Image (cartoon, rainbow, N blue to C red):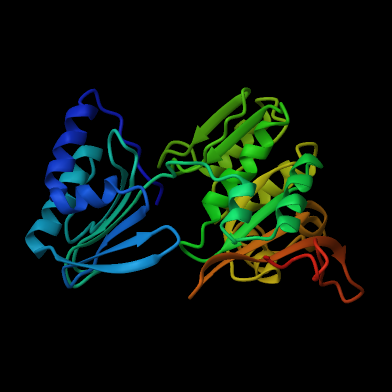
Length: 327
């Protein structure tokens, strides 16, 4: 289900109404720079995820009636129906662009939602080094990979910072002067390239696969994608591997090898035989982010060097182990 963008002449008024409906506490958390996500659980407890600190219980409680009211109001603004037969609503909040995912019974015991803020600031690779998320050698290797037009997949689990790192890589892309055609289904990526065309999916109108094909007709130098998660993976591989290198994309996976395996699974949604050789030839670099008790960190950074004698992926650390440590 693609996210439905909100386009309304009354967007400003709608934004004010929604902010009021969210209540002063949720509104205050959304205004807090460190907060990246606000979540309502079915038990009514509200949680926030703060950058660098992780998830914390706010101590606040929202009634089921108030939770349902917020979800229905968001649905109204995107022109969607939400009820027991259609208990999900995905949207962008008007004006400020937060990503909203709301659920009603019977898929949850009581109303539940998550509000994820778009990145307010693009962190550079140097910022990652300063924050201890990656060592200087990793940052230098990633910058060099972008300059060399390597195809890079940024992998990780939920809330590991895949989009934030992708935006840092896109900041490097912007320095190249290349024409960029960016594809996503949720407004998350930020690219300051002067020659930029940003495409977004619309449910029932244009899928990611449709937009990959359209992108090829727009004379792109690079085709970044927000998230690879379906049959469009094969279209993207073909685009990146046939004259449009230098792509960047995100994918849900927990390891470098798992990233390539996940890509195989996605490709199998459209074809039976997995073109492993095409994957090994097209994907050049895999960066894997993890989130543990110490926060977010870049756990793996590897180069894909084709297939080995057994036909499996040959993965080589992009940085020697002695250099790949944070000071």
